[in-house]
Length: 251
Image (cartoon, one colour):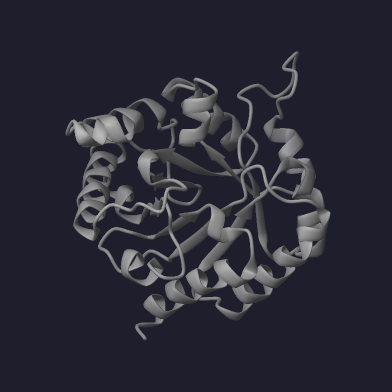
């Protein structure tokens, strides 16, 4: 059985006073060892967060494909490792939309992260227009096909399905829609990497909250959640961890 993973993405939020939230979230994660939990925080907080919660997984939200060079404002995988990151998000829809990143960029970033021992959460998802036009299946399959790095394996790679129109909007697909898309992704992965795809975790992301987490996490092939706004405070994030723990224990 695949372990549930609850991953938080703080995006461009968080200053040093918010470290107390990380400390509280880490404590909750320790209290529920039957699930995995992590936070991807701004670059400026990675080292401090890793210091205050050394037994909790801290990650980054992006990485450059090169190890070093004239790339103003970017950050490399070796830098993330030195800061204390253990995982990195690549291909997030906000990077694709706001920075014109392609699936090829995502592929290169995932490969760079892997070279330096970072685990990877690789995102895919369709826009609202693509969804309404009935193209969601084709879009996410294409994104996975073009983004999946060589040697993709479940011990270091996780897929996150995030319909772009559900991120931060309060909208969510129906449970049937989520189940269908996750099944499509699982089948695509099997076709690309074989039976090990059955062990690879596929997260759902997009307006996940304590109120809807239990129902979403109970859907077939949903192995956890990538959480945005609700991960910023322990009060909102811990109930999602607890929902995952209840499912893991069969309560």
